[in-house]
Image (cartoon, rainbow, N blue to C red; front, side, top):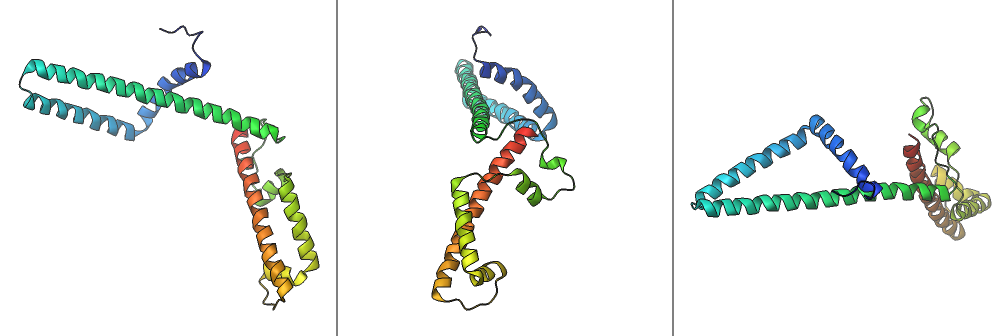
Length: 202
């Protein structure tokens, strides 16, 4: 058996957690119990069919042993990939924390939106989010220029006011719509990152 002090930490965590998690899920989830019951019945039926088609007992035992060895190797493959995905999940979480820290989003336990029972989501998010990207600010600056210079365009865009626009205003309306979409895209990315941070704080 591999010396526990030489085994990688993530593998130790995987094997330590796996047994408890499997038992807990097995007790709570009927789906896995149903799956195992079907596997057991299928295996019993397979053995029954093999006994019928392989009358020679020696040959039957040989085939039976080959199937058991196959099942064993298959379970080892499943365990290998399970361990790989466990490590990937831990690694991704670490990378997420590093990315958030690099963006000056401090990872620490604090209140989340769920703590603000009477708070409005939009109000809370606007208070917590800081749009620091150059792209976002550039889009907002361009929007400000258009809305101040072309108030009729703003009325059409925000209020759907039926106004006949000239060619220049139509061009600016299309530009405004495109910039607005880009601003929303930047906000969605910020909301996504905020959501990850909320999960880490929860």
